[in-house]
Amino acid sequence: MNFNRNDIEIHYCQSLRALKFIFEQTEVHYWAKWIEKDLDECENEKSVHHHISAYGGMGSLSDLIICTQNGHL
Image (tube, rainbow, N blue to C red):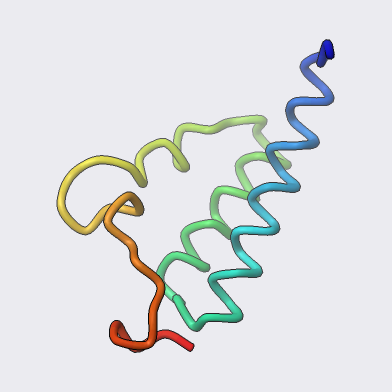
């Protein structure tokens, strides 16, 4: 399956919306707001820089575990 740049941008933005929905439903407020900024950059600037900066280092998105023990729904 071949994707053009427009297809990739559409799928990327859709993935961000899905991730934001999950974070909102589980009350992961910090990351929901972060993804909101990613969506803004995706839709208006066609940029992924903000999203990529969420990974790496302590407390990054890579460290997130959504569970009731961590105060999530």
